[in-house]
Image 1 (cartoon, rainbow, N blue to C red):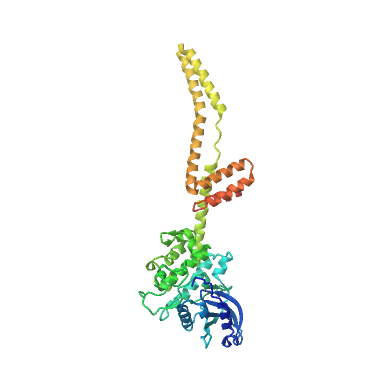
Image 2 (cartoon, rainbow, N blue to C red):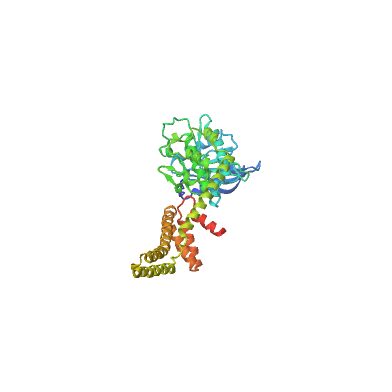
Length: 434
């Protein structure tokens, strides 16, 4: 339920008073606030009799602007009562409104760990092994939910609602958007979920098990790249998984099916998606192969930059002048020896040699300049003209001994490089090794 509301004046006091109700205060010791959604607030607490950690989610009539919020809350309670899976925190109790107490309280076991959203905020990124493990665990939860009778659809799978414990166990929380799908697929329902993680069909109020697969796919892309779904590369209406994760080989096609905008192009079920999930060892081999190809591409890119930025040997003007002078002198001698055919032939032979000495270095210089120019044009097409210009400025600054300018232009070239294999980074790394 991805929106946040400015609560009405006095709403916070109403929630606090609800937590002081005898049914709750006598049984639970209240802890810190865990979070607040659009209508409800959740607190950590401890059950006095057993010592177990619980979460208490409170909804007050003072915090809602539509009765639909109460319906969703009661539906969440009704569904959670019947769930029994290690990936879903267990239902503990429900406190209904009392006389003069327009509040509802849901008590569940507290999922240990921190949400993926909190970890992402600290700079965490899932490794390929973690990504496969995370996907497998969430799919096992979804298989359980979707194969219940009737199926249970979460409709809000996202990093905030996935709790990762220190032992690697993942739990799915916040069933506030849940739907016990008794209605037919064609029947329109309410729009729930969080933009960016919502499957497109949810905007029409149409929820199917494939909608949860979409939320999982986008979540996996977020934790793998650190990029919010709104900022992922798109091709048309579909997320461009290949551009977002170029190094994850067999996982790319699998993820692309999860996040297909058309539900018909996704896996038919969570069980099918789980069966098709690449193994971690196969993914590791694919990543190693991709890394080897990237190294080879990087070396080729480094060679291309070397060619483009190399200095052409300066034209030897002394050789040109000597050759031109010899040609002129021998030409004059040939004119003087015009009456002696044999001597004239010898003189003209030497004159041609002098002309060759004159033209050969000019031709070599022109050829080298032409090759460098072509290499520059090719490189500019690969990394982009702005990055190429920054590299040329960096090279000039190096020749002039200006380290500050060198660092500035190097950073600009790295930032502007648009090549898939990051050619500038590969060239700079090789330059440091050399």
